[in-house]
Image (cartoon, rainbow, N blue to C red):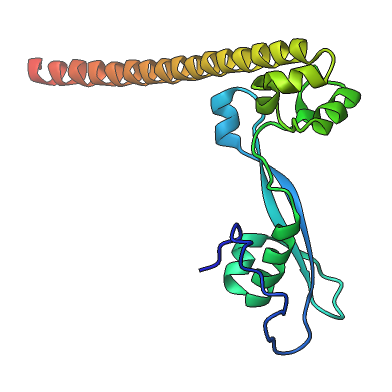
Length: 192
């Protein structure tokens, strides 16, 4: 079974393949997580390794999730292991570029000291705080932002539950009116 994290095993010789080899281009893409975003009340993303496979002589580029393609194709698995061996492990969380209180210079400075997500910023260690002026205030803002986002998520969830409850009540009222009308009709028939 293919394991992309197993970069200890890396054979420098590519596997045999019939026909010409496709051109492969690996990159990391940011994919939104709608369920997690709704739960947290803020945008949450996950980084996914992607590969574009272009067959010789073709202009068609098909972007695919690298791990999925590597499970089906030995050559892609070999190339993916090679690429993973030279890349930094992607991190999951909210990218700094999406945080409203950070400007571009701050984002670049934070990345320069190894902070790549809002969650990293919120939990920045003291050693990082000493390396960047104003980081302590940014850390406090990050904590306040995530707390406010969680509160907003809770309020949104409660509002949704209340709306659903109101719809249920309206449906029950309509059913009661129908039942009363039927009861009245049956009472008239029995009384006649």
